[in-house]
Amino acid sequence: MNNIAFFYGDTKIIDEISLNLDSGRFYGIIGPNGCGKTTLLDLLVKHKTPAAGTIIYNSKDLARYSSKKLAREMALVPQNFYINFPFTALEVVMMGRYPHIPRFSAPSTEDHRIVAEIMAETEITEFENRYVTELSGGERQRVVFARALAQETPVLLLDEATSNLDINHSLSLLKATADKVKQTGKTVIAVMQDINLAALFCNNLIFMKHGKIVAHGPTEDVLSPETIRSVFNVETQVNDDSFSQSKLVVFRH
Image (cartoon, rainbow, N blue to C red; front, side, top):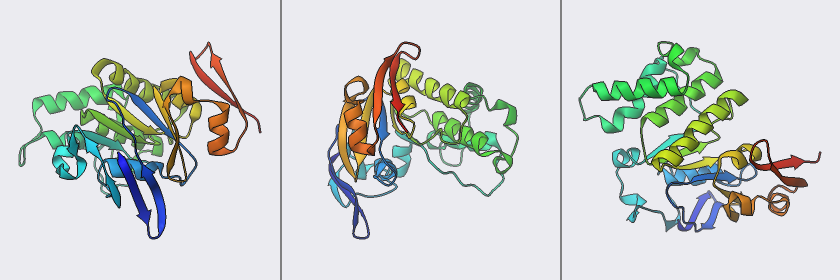
C-alpha cells in the first residue's frame, strides 16, 4: 500500500497509509471503532477504491485485477453477512468454489471433496442441509468462514470474523487458520477486537487510530502498554504468559 487515502464525503477515513505486508504471515489489525480498519480491508478486496495512492499485489496494481481473478487470490469473511434467500449451509460453502468453476459448469468431484473437508474441519457438517436463514448468528458465521476457506486463496481477510462465536469455536477457527499460515504459507489479515486473541495467533500487529498506522511490527515488539495507551487511552500490563505461551494483556477498570 503506497500513500492510500479514502474519504466518506469530506471525512478522511484512511489517511495516506503506506505499508508492506509479507506473505505467509498472520496479521492482526487493532484499533478503536471508526478508525478505518474495515475500510482498509474493503480497499484490499476492491469493494472500495482509494481516493489516492496505489495498492500493489504480487507486483501488479490491484486495480488491474478482474473480480474473478481477485476472487482466486483473496477471500473475505465479512463482519456482517446478510442473506434472505434460503440457501442451505452446503450451498453457501460451495459458493466459495465458484471462482474455480468454469462458467456454466457444475461443481466437480474435487469441489465437493474440498467443501466436505472444510465443513468437517469447521464442524458444520451436521447442519449442511439446514437453511442459513434458520441458523443462529454464530452458526451462520461459521458457514461464512467455511465458505472463505473453501475458496483456497493465498490471502484470507477476516473482519471481526469471530465476533459472533463462543470462545470454543473462536479458538478452533483461529487455530485452523493459523495452521494454514504455517503449513501452506497462507497470508491472513484480520481485524480483531480481542487483543489477547490477537496476541495468541498473530505474528504481526498493526495498530490504527484516526485512519493512520500508529505502530506495526512483530507482536512481541509492538504489543506494549505504551502502544495500547496511545491507541485506546487505557492502562494495561503486558506480560509473558507461560500458560498461553503468548503475550497477555491485563486491563485496569
